[in-house]
Length: 321
Image 1 (spheres, rainbow, N blue to C red):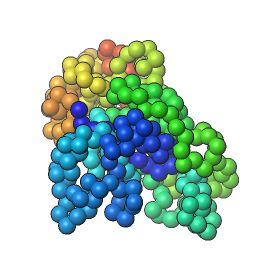
Image 2: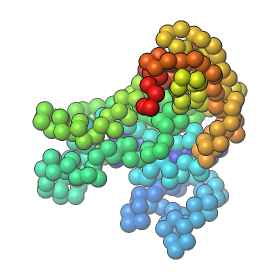
Image 3: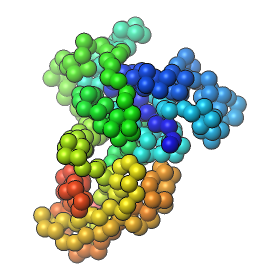
């Protein structure tokens, strides 16, 4: 099994998660990449990724030789997803406004930042930070996306998905408990919302997916990584695969304006996803010819479990849009 890849987005309970992983796997089995100048970055990472020659494959082979159980760091998902596989990639997301308030408190507390909260969140580098870590990735493909506000439930899902037992911790917090809320004025809330629209949309989608996954878990039903990619007047298309080791093809129902119009089986090749090391050698795509008009509402459902995707129907666009 490839090691887990933990995309540690700052102030999303990531420190609690990685230290819990250290306790389970052993510190020597967790490899970090927090940048060239960080003391937390592991020697093997420095040797292969920050030396004169950058050798990502050599890094992966070294991790394999040492039976590394998890790679982690403040790095974008593109950093290691092709080495670990998207199914072994894990991250946490947090309410964007609460996350940036926590980040500000962290900078004041640990780095002596003396600017105002507004000055801090107005810095372009602070805008849509969670989205920046997941650039180019469909959230539906990521192995597990936990929610900081539901940390215990997230950990339960992660442990069940990967058959591990990472213990629950609460480390590096600015508040007494992970669920505590930072006070944000209405004026700041309005401006933060304007500056972080991508993060807010990402978080809302992640929350819907998480609730759906948790519901299936409680019912003892499998979760499907599934995404509707194309909707036009002639066809609908997307991809789907089962989480875990089940590589049987996924049967997808196609619904138009709340009516079931037929099924498709996800067995078509999607070579563009192979770099993510998706299951079935990339044969996870589906498509179905349809006759649609602008304004029609399209949604799909996993035939076996009733899991809807996307979580809200997609509308057929008008020509030229």
